[in-house]
Image (tube, rainbow, N blue to C red; front, side):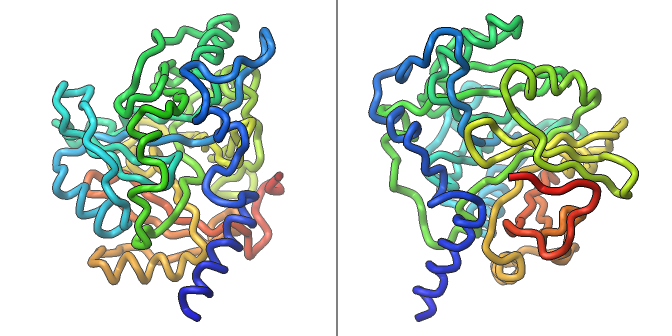
Amino acid sequence: MKSRSLMTLVAMVFAAWGLGGPRTNSAVSATLDSPVGGPAPAAGSRPLILGVAHMALKTNSIASARQFYGRVLGFQEASSLLNPLTGRPDGVCFKVNDHQYIEVYPGLKDPSEDRLLHIAFETSNARRLAEYLAGHGVKVSPLQSDAEGNLSFTLHDADEHPMEFAEYIPTSLSGRGMGKFLGPERISERIIHVGVTVGDEAAANRLYQDILGYRDIWHGGMTDDRTDWVDMRVPDGKDWLEYMLNVHDPSPRTLGVMHHMSLGVPSVAEAYKTAVGRGYQSKEKPQIGRDGKWQYNLYDPDLTRVEVMEPKPVEKPCCSPILD
């Protein structure tokens, strides 16, 4: 009965997030069965942008990262990855679900460095998306095979954050690992959003909103009369990019708070209990955020924040309604 109840709870939370499971989308299935380049969209159109693919981070200790992401959060290692910092196969890929990963690479030399290497979003057709962006005056890198063997390219947004767009390829590590490395120890089965600092909201919107089609689904602040966060949902999925506004000369600790990822969970209370039970020394407790949702913050050994969050508000959100 306990196992059945847990499965029911997981099904309920995916339904609440608007999904039948992690990244269920017919376009995704079609892409995985298609040759490199995927099915071509109509001329001049933007290919699908389906959701968060991965977040890549730097660490000064792979052993400590394994303890946090592997032991505390319960994610299995799907593969070793070629490290863009060292050129060696010493990166570690922690699998959240078949379409989402956390990549961690050794090479953090200074605690004041930004631990964020890049954020990646999944697209149905990387080649066409690169062409679409170039046609709108956005500078993109050459198309290449990324660390997992998927077809990808990178751009730098208005705040110089490297943003990668990846198309999953059947012969890649991701494609060959479908259905594998998905143990029951996972504290979450989905990355629901990622956050980055944004200095100029209008400049960010020119790329993410006007060109790529992301849309504002909620904005809020520390007080009701200000905006510190803007949630920009991908155009063809449920995940979102969170603008972290009003951040000036952040300390390493603050930068780790801002450049974060959020994991969707059925119960924050259970996630908290699990993390502490696995040895995580918690300085924070679960709380209801300004968006009215239960949430809880953990921090990896290099101070990157990992937020766990329930899908539905239990209180009225501040500042603006949450849009579907």
